[in-house]
Length: 273
Length: 314
Image 1 (cartoon, chains in turn brown, yellow):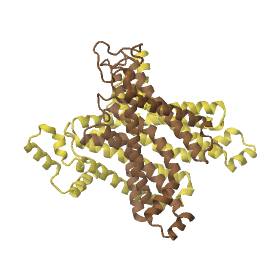
Image 2 (cartoon, helix red, strand yellow):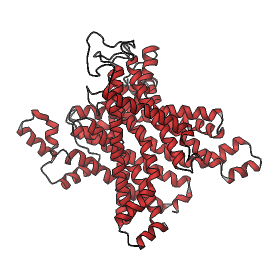
Image 3 (spheres, one colour):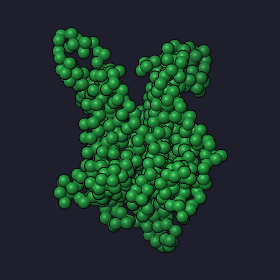
């Protein structure tokens, strides 16, 4: 019943609404921000919220509202690409592992176990030691951390689907391995993968913020919510609002995406509804 | 059981080999010449050649890997360039900060999440359940380092109760040391507790629907006994799995919170080593943390087999 009317589902609708606002803000920031997010002003530093600067200003007198708006673009970009990397690599590994089986499956699964030992923070630390820190390092490090979940999920459904009648029939009719995997098995494994991608997205946004905060991710002067919080920490006594707005932006975004993911899971997976 | 354990151990060894290979590839192979990264642009060609020689970079990669691994197995992770002491000793010296922080957070997580999760499940679709779920939804959305900042803002800037960071060391007494770990442990545990509440709730809900729970109720057992004895133990299996995965995440989270609260733990060691181009230290910390997480996951697998005999016979 919920399947036909997704908008009746409160969690899903609320999540979708918050997410749409986030995307709209990010899109708007590409065309218009109340002030130039990079313009400094030595006279108006660390101001609290006011009519001119609704969210106040940072230690260089930059408009925090404009920087929070632009930060949404960074978060979305890193999130989308990191989840893309994790899903792409994970699904490929899972398809091969589950379909070929045998020692290759065993080896790939141990590799996946090993990758699980590297949370995004740890990979980012390692990469930053040999390459310069930046958005690309964040994307790859966060993406890697997602590989095990996607690989296991895909492998599981390949193992299950491999023996089903319609796959066996397609094989008997002469379908090659590649066609079997891409036309028959993959499309039927999609719903759980879509849910996984949606629930990974907020995790990626949290990780991007943490990496930027540690100085391992997005670099100044480009606005990132995590980076803003890193700056704000030095001025907690002078302008506490500086720490409040970027943090709220992260929390609200992650909340919206989590609700969307939960709602989607309920709608796509009748078992949990 | 013995065969199950033997198979898990073989898998653990294979996984650890992959862990070390991944660290080795990133630090020694990807950059091309690690020696020039460590010396930066100021290094003279002679110094570069000496460092390459000292690090054994002139030898074939498999030989380098075998030597590094051989050393690591004997506890020798090389020497720190920055402090000129063994990397192993450096890691051990930072553990008294990172481990208690992660353990305190784990304690906080379990103490908050288990009762709340059971409460939510036993009050399914009532006000208490919704309140717990909203609370956990909010907890999952707040980044750990931001809740750390907010705790500093409230307890140290606003109220002036505790210092905003730093660690006095265990030598000054257990009380002051624990006090400097308290706020970071709360910030770290809060997020993970929010995750665990949901896992506990759904696990308990699943078990409450089982026939044997209905039987227990039918034979007149009190609700406390039904939930406490018959339900909770069976619900523990999925809960332990989630909590185990979270222990690994607590290690990673500790790295971030050490930075927020200026605690001299493993994370700060690694971050400092990056700015000092101290590759052996980064390599050592990464190997240590990743291996610990893999070993924790292994322990969870074993616990799974102990808690649920069905798994051993698969």
